[in-house]
Length: 568
Image (tube, rainbow, N blue to C red; front, side):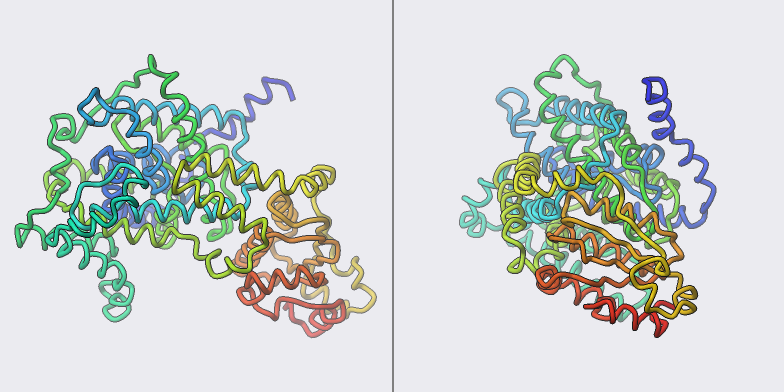
């Protein structure tokens, strides 16, 4: 392919034309979903702005930029962008290095220049068309990263939860825990504890009083926590306290990037860009699993680049596609980028109309919301099976978790990926040699053809997928692509007689395929596993989660299911 053709292909892939054309496909549903998600996003945006050390208002501007610009240019039709816990924590880590003189005040120009540059880097990454490599991230890296972020969010909000000044580093928080508990402001607990209780009990309350179910728990906690503080006139920190200087009091500010300091900013900008790719595309994969569609990784990276450039210019926290908001968008009926754009416009309207009220929100209330976010962001998929993990996967998970908490997010991810690659070189060489997709056949052309009832087989429309070699983080994407090549109205038998080894990424990848198949109303069974692989499936609760009926130990069991019309 020559350079002209390459550029044309890239521009065609990154063009927002398809997004624009889809805006009229679901107007009513998208407007309802966008407004609802915008209301849900408000307390989270304020909270992530707080954790970033750029201020709650910066969190809202980040959500506005992510919603409008990210929605228009992004590659996931139902994705909703804005500040996220990982990105807010990452920019906060850099703020201790960028302060104005000896004042200890954050250098906002430096922060927003870094965010702008990270967006520019994301645009270049999208042109290089390498974003799809996110699909090869080992699951233990993702799990360690998510659990590490959850721990960071919980620990960093401990001081705010008890009404004290937030510590700048995790090490400071841990060292000073005894002093923090001894010095707690009791008045702050009158806000933070009820807010946290509401967040945990709201799903139960919603089941009892159905009319309350549609009101987001974070918004309820925000309103009740703020009301308690205002009614009783509690002497505790408020968001308005962070808006004491002239710059912060301005709802609208514009920051011209200081490109003269690019050498100083380039390393943190690259780290933010790398984290944006990881954070965003993992959220897009979640959306793909729910909707059955497939996002464009390169276009999503481009959209995040444009959104972060906008956030840097308008004083917003760095953005990424947010899993929680994306899932909520799908749940409330969003189907096109219009929902994301409406979400951003809703937040803009709230910010411009209610800025003075935002200042009255107690930081203890935001800390309670972030506590719940930190708890929810922990990877509950890996935690129940952590004692059963293969040793290699356990080591990767612990490496990423510990480095994320005590050092740096991107260093943690790099260390985990490098360890995974070095420990899987033999398996990677096998996959590289076998470039073709795994084979699949109609069941009437497979090894089962001589023993099955042809009428039942034809009526059931069954294909046999025959993967081979190791099924691990380096090959699971190959399995997914091969599976997606099978007609969507066909049932599938995954024959694993040629699979030599399965790791955590392989097991969870298969589980995701099953979940997608259930949404598509197609039946899938797995057969011919080796004893060691069957043990891994049991240890990692794959068989329990998917259902024993979807597994066959032998060829005879498969034939029996076909002849007994299991697939109809």
